[in-house]
Image 1 (spheres, rainbow, N blue to C red):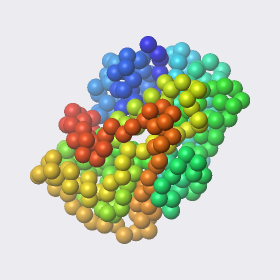
Image 2 (cartoon, rainbow, N blue to C red):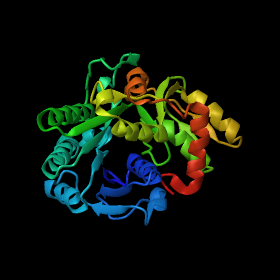
Image 3 (cartoon, helix red, strand yellow):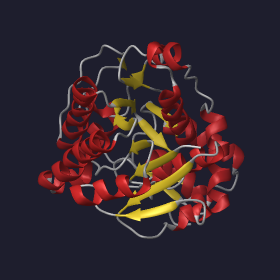
Length: 321
């Protein structure tokens, strides 16, 4: 049984990753600012260890890794776009200094693997190509995408220079219970989560804009499978992984079949900011290299995803519990 430290452990991605690892008999330590679990992750109580600390604080990170003698660090801690628009320097400290702290702790303490939650947004947020491939050049256009691309480069450099087994996956729109629901990026998860809770929901995004979805369970399974993959099978350090393409109108149709009483309304925000947000998630990611190298295949297409999402919410895993 291996010991795994998950940075950003109390977050949306971290909590689902913890459940997956626990299901495989692994030991899990959550590194996070809070010393307690959020309402949607109460099922993890007594099953994981919690190590509170600040990812941008070198001493906190070093002590967390050293005191738990971990075998693998899954690095998911990061501030998102809206936070970085308010403070670029805070984004630098958390997203870039946090990454270098993780990598340096792994180097000094002999941690075998550092597995990184990357972002497909590095391909462009205002006008990404319709489909991205393993060799599509990154085009970071804001502070968030700049920090995510920089973190990838740091990880690859630590692999080259120090032999740290750095691997990562770029995702587009990861959806699932507990994802942050905001005005510009919240509709893709929010419409399912809120209606599953019996609440009305108003969609402000373009309902006919295609989105590159991946369900959280596919996302964490891909990350764990990448970690397990023999080195000889890998052609790159960071892979694109994609679930399926769908519009919010198609998602809504599935919800209404499963929850006939769902109250869903449309109130299109026609602002340029919303148009950019919609375009920024409308690209398809080619799965071919991930499929060939470590066997990734989507297990949660649209209808299966919505059905499981609703079930998870009703089990108490929504953001508000």
